[in-house]
Image 1 (cartoon, rainbow, N blue to C red):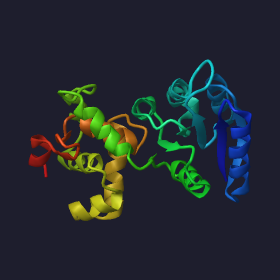
Image 2 (cartoon, helix red, strand yellow; image 1 turned 60 degrees about the horizontal axis):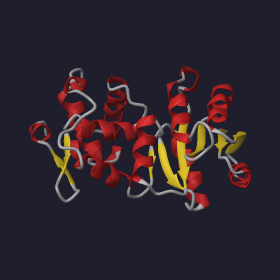
Image 3 (cartoon, rainbow, N blue to C red; image 1 turned 60 degrees about the vertical axis):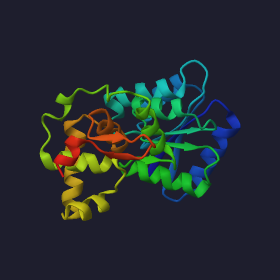
Image 4 (cartoon, rainbow, N blue to C red; image 1 turned 90 degrees about the horizontal axis):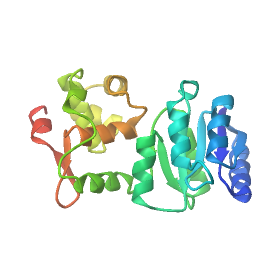
Length: 234
């Protein structure tokens, strides 16, 4: 059974999400939070598989609550799915950097929301359509990749950097396996090692790492392409 915590400052919205969750045979709501602080405290106590997190809440907002949850060792297995009515770039980028594993708008279809919860509970990341484009556009505004020094990749192998490059280009594990002519299990192993070596919680943060280390660079038109370093490693 997948355990879900619902965090939203509007009681009607919380109730609606809780009802939706409880109607699914494999999901159960384990609590509700009206503030970011409550969400962080409940997450530590209940240790849900997934937190449905609103962005705008009184006091501690959803971004900071996510940061607290992802930094808490007691919540190591908790995935945070950001839900908001605001399709704003700064929320997307801030949420991913805070450790969120997914980002969806509240007008997402109920069936798609339930699917997203299952995706996060399985340990994967989920981004709404257009999120990868926003990440690319964010880095387009930066003259040079920043945030993570090149030394971040020092412990990775050439093949792991190949895999990280392909993750940054948006390929799935299956597509990576096909591209590198390896088995799916081998591709998954490489992804797992990258998560560990780069200290990333999930695939969304690996996408960020691919850009920040310069393996993938945004083209002027907003379409990603390989850096010279990434191309040489292919």
